[in-house]
Amino acid sequence: MTQQDPPGLDLARLRAHLDEQAPGLVTGALTAEVVQGGRSNLTYVVTDGRSRWVVRRPPLGHVLPTAHDMAREHRVISALRGTAVPVPGTITLCQDPEVLGAPFYVMEYVEGTPYRSAAELEALGPERTAGIADALVDTLVDLHAVVPDAVGLGDFGRPEGFLERQLRRWKKQLDASRSRDLPGVDQLHERLARRLPASGAPAIVHGDYRLDNVLVNGEDRITAVLDWEMSTLGDPLTDLALLVAYAERGKADLEFVSNVSSAPGYPGTDEVIARYARRSGRDISALNWYIGFAFFKLAVILEGIYYRFSQGKTVGAGFDQIGDGVAPLVALGNETLKD
Image (cartoon, rainbow, N blue to C red; front, side, top):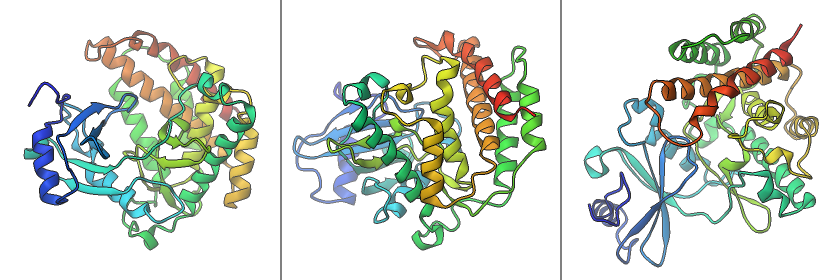
């Protein structure tokens, strides 16, 4: 590796691989930079001085290949190309760890901004903010309208028993990172287990759908939906509920979670839900369960981060405060599901 190579990306090896898989694509020496803001998988923008591409690979030292499945991400993005869901074009998937030390894929670079804060939206004004939020909901409806079999994703997941498996999975995650008393969390789990709803028609589920996981261009159109690492076939209302939970997180005053929903012009939760219901035609009568589950899931994620920090396994600024967000999320979940 040279000094220009960012961690986890050997540009000479990448160039050789691209020359073999896509002859003529690269016309000059490659340089790269790491894209900040990704949850777990590493993302790089690579350029030859004329064109740009994006490379995705698992984090350095990853030990759970199933949690960072490059082939899965590559498959869903490739399948959605040509649908109403905007995604980057894919160029190549490499599952040979000899090339970069881990599987990776390369996709087209798409222009756009991932809006992460209310301040960024405030600069656009209320009218544009409202339009972007509406586009976010409409794109989610478009995703859930894709017929999995029609795009070759009929076997992308197991919709039967999806909610039960999800609840079991996140309870297992919680139990694996318990290191302190968390008032109300067992009550929240019991409420969720007791009221498990029957799912409607399954759909392609993104798994972490929010404004900073999409790119928006200067005309306020969504140009790409990104970060498909949690995608599967399942209950689409889990996507809507997570979008709502991220917006409602303002009640918990979590500084480290995107606060875009507090920007002037951003529609309220009731408006977001009504727009989704109207455009999708889906039954949302049990949505409170899904929102309660979304708060439970977010609480478990934060507790896991706190646990790793308390064990000295996570370094960086801000991690010491993440544990403070768990209790408010649990409280919001219980409030949503209260009898």
